[in-house]
Image (cartoon, rainbow, N blue to C red; front, side, top):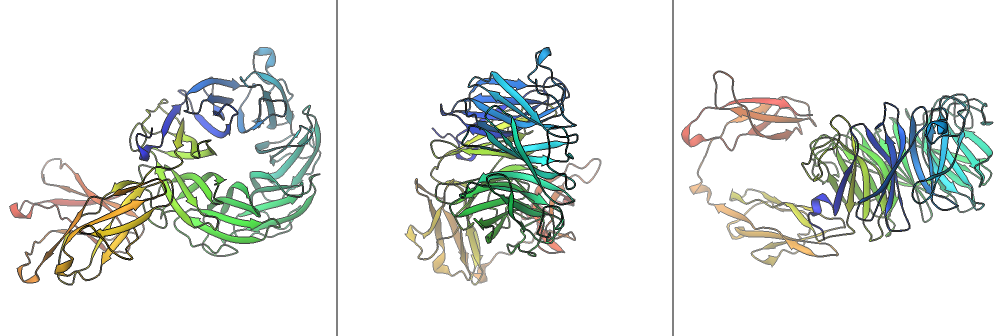
Length: 580
């Protein structure tokens, strides 16, 4: 039973006194989930960590897998022999003789490290792959028909160790083909003389693969397309033997960083973060300092459309997946208040933020979850009941929408939030009553939480107002006959709810009571938010009280203190503080 729609269906916090960073989640055959990441619980060196939970997020078992060094788990896949395959990277020497998990040799500074485990987490085998330098970010894994795997990530190594493919510059895409007994069959490198970043891998209809990430390389090495700005989304199409067939770039004049690749009918979606204005082949508007940016492409890499999402500060993207209706669910973080095309509230420094789109990328709804600290979704998966599991980091106490206390004192915990398939809308901000005189405009607005698209219908004294089907209702020139009770019915496919009544009071201008309130004029930066405070104690150490927050749309801009006790003529001192 859903107790609080704003907090999700359930929440769980897991962690140690150290720094805990989840990176991936996998649905299991018993209806539960395997959550993977890295922890430094035992020392200053990180280890693979795997947490098995049931469908309600209750811990069933937890295992760590260590080397003599630092290890980071990037992906989990179902193993061909049953159980699971852990894919990540390690810079540590073998330590199985000391009770550790690593028996594979170390080739360079950091290698890809694969660990096969059974259904209860017991290790079966491990192997490593790499050259003399860093081979890392092994976040892509696809099982092959013979029971082997294709693994993709990044490499800075020259041909050395068991790496045979060239090094083109910086970090290259590195693709390896592993047989059923974990033997390396072949490897391929792709990139230019600068650096590439890796985001994901997906099989293609012709038996090949699509590799996705970012690039700031020119058209050199194996890269045939130039950059549009300081960094672009970048994809490489290869055949079944890993031979490059084509590559494409997508971006604007700034920095664009791809974080996720989603396969869907007729093509793919690339999702990440963009700091670019409309330029290059980006056409979507810029919402804030950093937007979530989505690019849809067909099977040949031709761009179909692009869309941007976010408020007026910054957004980040950690994961994305396709929804059953052909749309997308995007998940990451936001430290923006409502604005741009973000409608969800802001709870603290950075919140979990999810956004749902239709098949053309049009925003359907968005929601945020968080406390007064920092939250960031790193992974998500679909639940069997049609909902979703969000997995990320949190350093907030139990406040905002976060109901679980913090476990660590200095670092992040795992934070899991179960999102239901849908619930009836829940109103988070009611419309407010207003008093106007003839000819004045008045606007009523409502904010609601829903995990599916919502519909609005405004009513006046219980009767529907034709055509008033948005979250706001504006009367451009109020008349006496429009005085009365205004409500709005908000509905989705599950149910509906009606708001409290906002009463419109109409005052004849001839009998209008004039009240004078003080105002503060702010000469600040448009788009920045400022906190207005007052004190009634003008001697000694003033006690400052918060009046409100104001995000400037222009400069200068005034803030009126409507709460000032003018009837007593009590004096107030004001100050303005920048609120990042």
